[in-house]
Image (cartoon, rainbow over all chains, first blue to last red; front, side, top):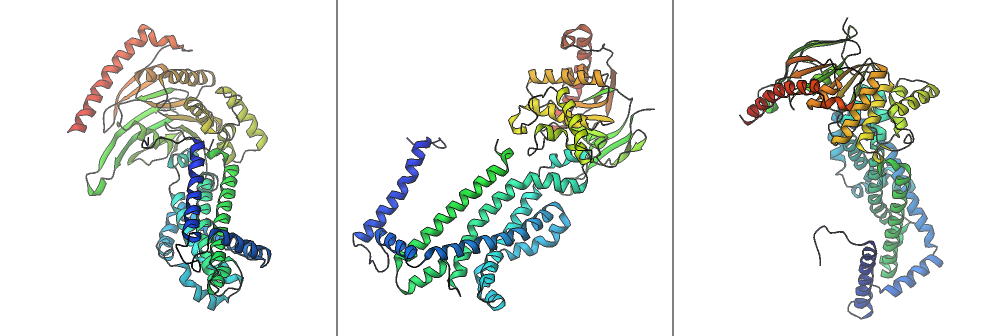
Length: 258
Length: 263
């Protein structure tokens, strides 16, 4: 019986979660192996695995994987280093917010992918251009979310700190920043997920390496098995980095969970 | 000379959406002697918290001024320790770090800090909990930490804004005894805001009763009950007589508040 908001037992939860994957793959196998779709356009699960294995063993696909990972984390790190301090400044000092907020709100709707032709003109088709795509795609998002979180710092904590003799500087460094650190880390985790979509777009255009390059390359050879394998690899790495990020946050900010 | 002098302090809030400005506090005059324990008693919304926040420097008065040791209050500072009704411990700091926060902000050396913190941990009975996060503590323990945190700065005056308001009755009684015990031993000028009549009498050497909004001082009742006070005092005839008198005073104001709100 399904009752609204009623919790599900942990064991059942795991079983249900896995069940959908099984159903999904089963459906995929049925339409491909059963001959319901043309296999030129959609590879079946088994050939996908075979293609994937060949990619890894013969085509040194792990080099593409590592270059993509480096681009994501490089661009994301650049964006974080720039965006987090700006976001904190905007949240803490209202004149800074009034100065930057309208522009940042506008800039975050500029699609990163549309910048690629321009970035290629400016930075060529090397690594720097790939990093810039991710940077452009992430930096405004991080600034804005961090500014909102910092702006919502609990006022009673700030007041308490003032009555304890904190200076304005002390409030920013020892109240606003630690109070929002877990939320900022959560924001970064979220935006890192988006960075994975930007990197693939960046690699589809003007690239000669990376998972995205492999995917666009496979398209011209109708190697749908390889494309699907590439997509699944991205999903798995995304999931892994998400887990790692969550674990890191739990370890860094035990007080926010206790 | 009075320790704390409140001179013609009033507060008017700007009207919402171009409406009439709201007067929260009529001009209030109050002189507090050193080491006095003053409770400010009034119905909710009478502006007693506003008055306390003005003394703390967290809000500016619309008229008048507050003098502490003859110096005008313009902004919050460590000479006026404050305990809030809401739990305001810094969640990212342990109990000990919370108590040491003010000392750290003032750049006191770590060794000195640790000694002071240890003595206040002891004073509020939190030994063994120094390294707990606030989230791991009960409401009563959090407020004990907050009191220790405010006292660790050795402020000239301690301001408390319904500090036990969110606690259950039993815990509240114990906290009253704890705070009163500290005051009896250490002597400190205290301004304590509450809407609980029993609490106001039990703690105070002087109860200031405030009228319904816009608040003003309605009566000033000395409490000449002997110290040290024991919780059994709450059932004594002298206590009951005071309680009856204040209950009458406050009831009139509560009725008035209810009427203005329904009007």
